[in-house]
Length: 268
Image 1 (cartoon, rainbow, N blue to C red):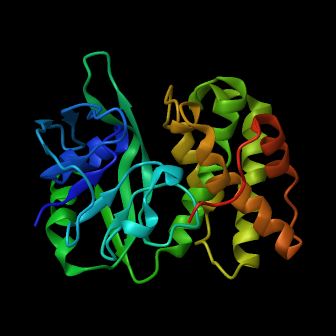
Image 2 (tube, rainbow, N blue to C red):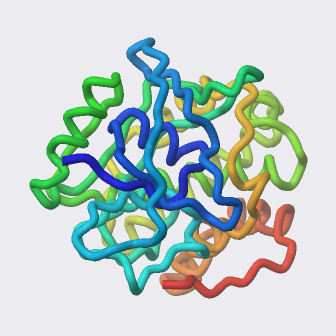
Image 3 (cartoon, helix red, strand yellow):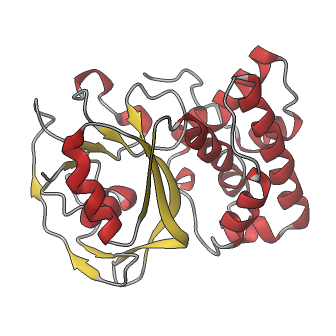
């Protein structure tokens, strides 16, 4: 069975095309970001999903719109959510990838081989997961994806917000010794905050951050287009740190650099 993509932006088109999604639910623009996607296996797929006017019962929905734009209370229970951050009340995929669009309009992955970590879910998603794997995406099915979600959130709370604060690409932030040091300190703080919240991220987080960001080159994260994601990736870590009395000096410094009055309440 195929799925319907809610929010066919860069990520929605990339995952939707890889899954051969049959339909899309667009946002206010009514547009699909692109119908040409280069998959990790090297294939360029011409993708032509049908428009679907709204979320309907019994649809298999892959949620790729931004957190504040998500109709949480009308989503079916068996949906999958491909979003950054914490606080979502559905089965959320930890997406370790960057997605860009070239000058010819082709969407493609940037950085290491794309990897998705998700909790084992409704068997109806088996065909989609198989299609992602066939497309060259690594898909790890786990009994509990909480550690992976926290790891991705910690990564999202470091370099991306500094891109927002400075206007630099991920590669430019990472190449700056002072900013890279700040990011790694924030990564260590995030790891400690997770452990204080009874979430055990596997050892080696800092080295995985070095590997991931070292391969991101000139990628410009989604935060540059929509800072409303900040509460879900940075504020939530700071709030959890305050709750448990954890050190968050570096995360706080990043927050002060990029904060511009975003609403801090998670819209769940």
